Length: 544
Image (cartoon, rainbow, N blue to C red):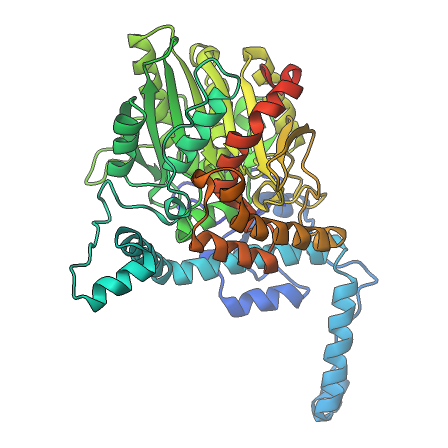
């Protein structure tokens, strides 16, 4: 089943190129909240304009039809209408309760399950669209408050300055000293001193730091890369999303010329906490049918991620595109990054590169070589050292995973997918018979003690398992306790601030959300990765 945030109204061929005809597409802009609730419980879906699907028209199959044993709601015979309308409220309440319970009992049946997934997906996207501007405004004010506190000695120092009538430092949002919300949770920006080029953990260390830095503004990124890391800053980019009609994908590129061969790093930004557009990208669960453009055996990929990577509206993935000129320079991520990499390797034909990212950024990182393969970019693929992702969601079906595994092995590209503890994001979208998303390759899994292991898949793969509920609460309690002790046990570099401690407390109620923090991934690489590589070198040396 497929769900999509948008459809190209101007080019009907786009859907035939990009989206699978075997699955439906949804358009949240064409439905109201009231219609959504009606859709969830009413049997007839022919009037719902926000559901678009070619296969249903072609095959005359309705996945929302309930089985014959589905309970009838109320007999609508003409001779019963007056009787029903005259019944007291108690009668109507009994009917409501009975039907509601029967709906719950039918939840495992595919028709109602389909409706429920559509309902939740579209409802959240509609809600995000509704609160997009106030969410962005509130997020920017909250970030500014965190930065003001940080620049003025935290809350106690700020209050002291106010009492003394001293000047309060207020940073500019685009300054090199301004931190994003993600950055405020972990301000460590220096590369670990004990990790050197040639160490098995070198690429992972630089990848996790780049993934963390990708959430900052351009001035901040440039300062860290040039002044702290002593590397060449190539550029910071706001890439256009042709489907959302705005720049919503960010990435930066830098080159380490202090090593041989030179290493170019491409880091994609993940989902920002207060960015509704990025959350809508995550929730666009339409399938992008790769078999239509790449041939049999390539499977299907998450359409929201494909759009963010640079799929061309109305065309899909043409090998080359003409750059659109106008007031806004509409550069698409994949095409621009590919062009920059080719320019870099024309100057140094022995260079190598890696792609990395956290969360949504990890999804874009792993899809990037898939499109390179589609365009037969063998020269770039042979220069790719590896893909390093942290808290990456699932990006495709099982067939796509098999295709990617074969392609990585053919070009000897390392694929290192890091998962920390009960992080919820790598366990989404669901790996089940309804959504059919699947991870591929091995998983480098770290527990709450930052002890790592290499596993085929993370435990509790769909997160909401009842048998894991108390285990997750217990682990969240351990993580909160660790916040108060880790600095004493390790060093002051691992000291956690009050904001992160608060998020750990939220994790007691919603275990798995706090585990998505990049701080835990950075700690895992710093403290536990050496041991993982020493024990599983045979699995991690090239690809997994």
